[in-house]
Image (cartoon, rainbow, N blue to C red; front, side, top):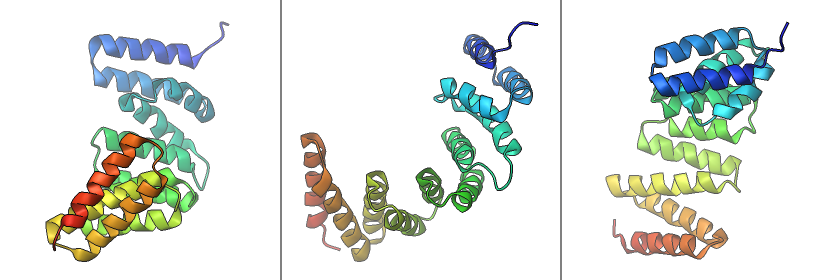
Length: 197
């Protein structure tokens, strides 16, 4: 019996999809592949197509479904991210992110997705603030907090949000490694400091 290599089969499925563009056929073939491949092996195989959420979703739906309790936090985050990228909707993404946070409170990806999915701007600022308190060195979270606080300050003439945005940008500026990044942050701060709310 010949040796079965799911990565070769996945490559063939993806190439056929790239020629045809038929997502339905792609999903059918990926689900069949996922059914006969062990979850740990699926993670390795899926890595080659990590930039294609339409490929990641059927494979990681199987990985998540077959994860022993309490579940695989990182697999939930990968699936949630793929859902987010394909516009699956904030509710589905948030449910996965919350589960991942509960399983592994140190998983920053879960916290980021949880913050992203909040539709209400003020509540989204609160979520990003919580993420930055939990992960103080997380520059991406601080940038998201600064951007969202800026939007809140602008939309609602909120002086507290403006102070939060300025403080967040200042903390990023203090750590900015490159000249271009420093100049962009300085320009943002100059603009924000000129606002009169």
